[in-house]
Length: 191
Image (cartoon, rainbow, N blue to C red):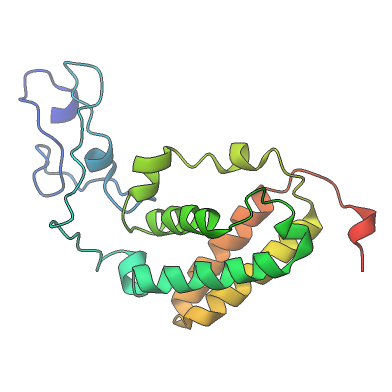
């Protein structure tokens, strides 16, 4: 039985480096050990609040994918070029009710930065991503997926990542796009 499950051991926040068990923390896809993101004190049975970092407390992202590829500026470039492609594609543009794509671009930037180990702003502002749920109102056909991937390809290419980082990012993007297809092909969109 480890300290996290032993009521006789004093409660700790479970932060990396201070883990009472001495075990290596389990990383999450959001870049922090799960014990930091979701510290659950056994005796209360509910999560303890995790204070939001202050602007003065700059996080060190060097050991994350986010930090390795250049952080905010790199992801900002990828997403900005991607949304230029969205704006130019009538099929994809029709999926956005907002006249200004700026808010959608900001949401996507927050999501992708958080996913790759950057700031947790998306989680704090919007909660769990729930990608499939958020895309259900839209007919995401294989053709729409391919158009989305073409716009994203332009964004990834603009970032000029190393081959390893580019392949890692692109693998995720292709799998995520495929998972969101929720409608059959539309014959009217065939070339």
